[in-house]
Image (tube, rainbow, N blue to C red; front, side):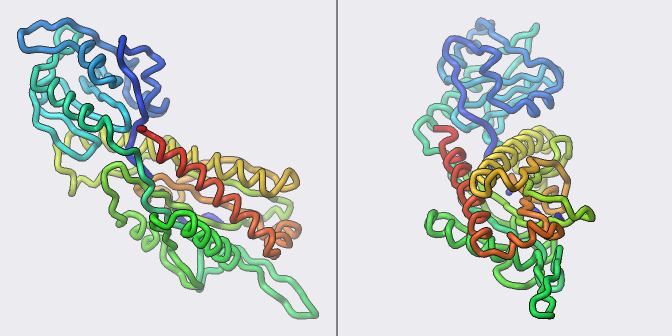
Length: 368
């Protein structure tokens, strides 16, 4: 049952400049992020209007970056190879990857055109030049959250065997899956941190689970996953199948901590939205990969209930990409019987494992 939480990265994907920026190149940022940018994106090519200025076209050609421009907010973002630089017309600084404040010359918006000072242009050259040969992203941590535990059994069903009632509890099913999954992931990724919110029959509160996730320290270009694992329940005993939940696209949460942000607090909402949209995109991708592997491992006889949206406590409070899995309905007699079988639990574990492995491959190739 859904009472728990979720996890990942650094925003943007690889772009190409060169001969100019086409509309298709603006797809670097996901559609939901483009909607945030208020108006149609305006691409501004200019000739130098001042002795020490650099045209936008020259910048794009030399850096190979793509530009997203918010005409109403007078804000722009260059991106390439996983690096992003956010600027605002008239400000003497830029923000690199949502973390580092770069003092620089100004960018002027004049008669619908952008003019970059030599200092501003040199800053962009250094950023995209230095990072050109950098390594790609690294998924540092995978945090598995077996739902419920201890005094909280979650969904439960009782079986009679020789006149004795034997309980099948959600907390036990998801813990067994999580322990198997953690063991397989540790063997696959000896250099990554594979963590569990609980490794035995105890009950961490929802707040403790979220805090454990949010306290994990990530360096530049590192990310993490938060995967909460549950079994389902319904008043309809015929309800059956697996599903994956993620935070609704229109739900707004704070993923940037203002208290530790070193730049101008006025740009925190911009950076927060960009990161939040990327986390949502990554959560959806992970959900689809796991669903595909569920279908492959469990076969056509088990219904695929698909990807779903809900603002569960742990999802809305985790500052990372995350998904919540429902592996089956304990309240369905046929599905409960399957969930009692060790071989069936191994199939579920393998499906999640393969979905994570596919996602890690995707994530660590970004920006290369």
